[in-house]
Image (tube, rainbow, N blue to C red; front, side):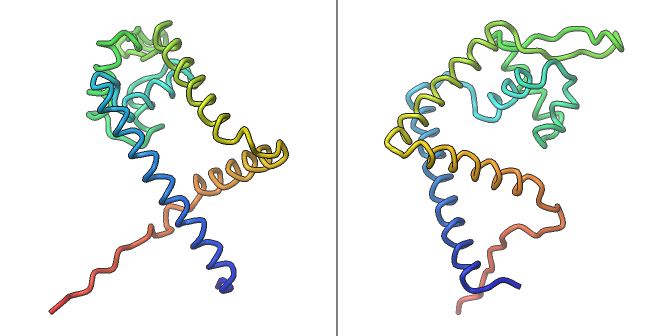
Length: 164
């Protein structure tokens, strides 16, 4: 099992992660309130995958974001409507379509990425350069470990108790 120190460290990390997720969600909700026509976060993530991974079929996109095809279909329709994604014939199978980011979709992605990077740079600007590099490396290591957790690992459970 784990030592008390290891569990205490895990608790401190978990507490900060929960805090960070809540802050991100609150920031996103405020942004959505100020920009009601902005894309939903889940829809934007599809654009990110199409820019980074290149054109792909809707099924492959659904698999890469761990979503179902019907949800992806609705989100892709919105991306097509705003001009960020286009459907093209799959050269390997003319009956199928590929989804690809448009020039405008790539521009929006790059603008958002630049804005995100500037906000993060401002957050850590006062840190020692070695601390910034170490944080980036450790966060990458943590995220990779999280990504590779076995699916048999049970997620955190909420235990309900009956009250009389």
